[in-house]
Length: 148
Image (cartoon, rainbow, N blue to C red; front, side, top):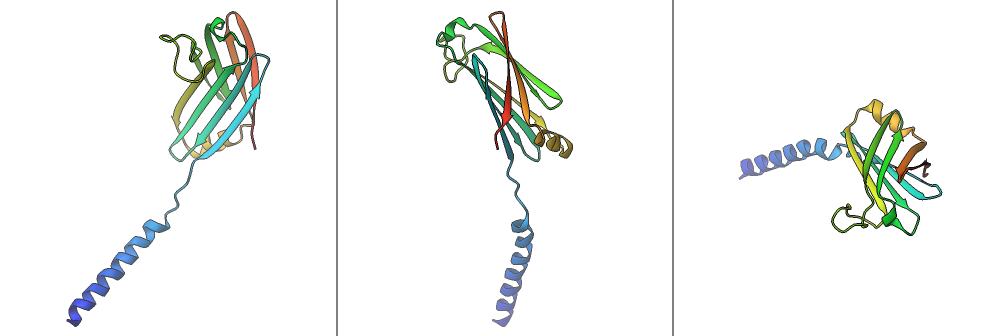
């Protein structure tokens, strides 16, 4: 009987020791940076989500005018750090069959890229995201400022 108790105690101690390193591992949550700004015709937001394995960039613009159907195709370029991302589409919710889903008068852009410590540090220092919007022969720029 003593042999069974000794084996059980030894087994429980082994499980406890093996379980400690797993519980002691630090689980890092992603760092999220947000940016906001507006111009005469547009409101813009941008989010950088920096995790150990990836950097996710999500841009969103919204037309401030009332006649969103007249805007047509919109090309939007986000300049972040040393890189940029461009999207071209109709605004959401304008044409039932052609336009993307989302809040009426908006356009969204998302990209995901691998991350290293160097890239993470570079993106963490970004204070302003420059957005250039082209539509219907017009061009407008917005500076999106980091929200603290």
